[in-house]
Image 1 (spheres, rainbow, N blue to C red):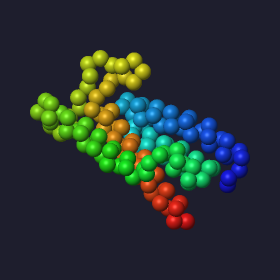
Image 2 (image 1 turned 45 degrees about the vertical axis):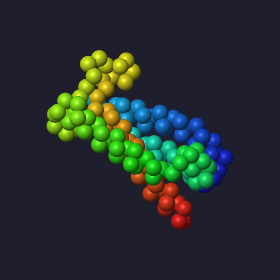
Image 3 (image 1 turned 60 degrees about the vertical axis):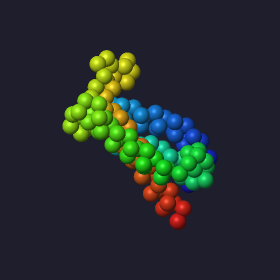
Length: 137
């Protein structure tokens, strides 16, 4: 499956799919989507790149093993739930929101940081699984 058409298309589709995954991540507050679906779309972008260009080139593109994303995402998601306990002595996972929305992103709150943590975890888990399976085949 390493045709010139697929290789060329994957080089253009990678950034487009990554931008779309970020759009889905940010859209998840108000409409369907969020960290899980956005992380899956981002991992699909890297898998498509690996199919077209080889696993070695995709790993060079990532610069580090995707397994390192899992603890980083889990930490971010946990800290976003712990922030209301530490700052305002409220229950775990209570949503905190900024008063003024940011023009492109919208309202920023702890739910966004939780979604980003889930996004990072899903990206790390799926890429680790798929890269491990690809290496053993």
